[in-house]
Image 1 (cartoon, helix red, strand yellow):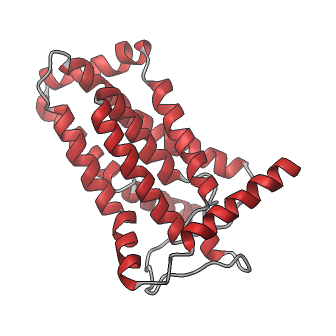
Image 2: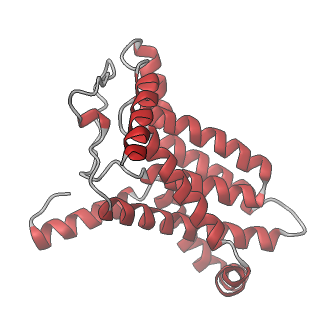
Length: 239
C-alpha cells in the first residue's frame, strides 16, 4: 500500500509540473489544444499509413501485412484499455477532481468526455500501438511517432484529461498489444490473406480499408456514438 501511495504522490507531482503551465498564457493553451486534437492525430495517422502502404520496397508485401496487423492491434489496444478501466477502481479525471490544485485553461475546451475512468488512457494505448506498428515497418517513422505521441499525451496531461500514470499505463498496453499481434502466426493467417485480397479484389479491399482507416483516425468516434446510442436505447443510461 505504501508503494502505491508513493506512486500516486509522484504521479500528482509530475501532473502539477505539467498542468502548472496551463492557464498562464492563452497562446500556449491554444497550441496545447491543437496538439491534443483528434484531427491532428488522424491526419498524421492517415498520411503515415498511406506513405508506408505505397512505399516501394522489396519487402512491400511484408510491410503491408504489418500495417494490417497494426489496424487490428489498434482495435485490441482500445478493448484491453477499456477492460482494465472497467475492472480496476474508477479514477476520476484530474480536471473533474477537486482539491488537487488543478489549473484550467484560459478558454473552454468545449469537448465531450465519456464518463470513463481516467486510468489507463485509451488515447495513449492507441497512439503507442500506432507508434509501435510504424516502428516495425520503419524505425525512422516509428521514432517520429513516438515523439509525436509523447507530445500529444503531454498536452492531455496539461489540460487535466489524464494523470501521467494514466498515459504511461495506456502506452504500455498499446506497445504490448502491437508487439504480441506482430508474430508469424498472425502474418500467415491474418496479414497475408488480407493483403492477398488487395490483388484479387482491389475495389472491395480499398472500399473497406479506407473507411476503417478514417474511423481509426477519429479515434473511433462514430463507433463510440453508435455504442452510446444502443446502450441508451436498451438501458436508458447515458455514457
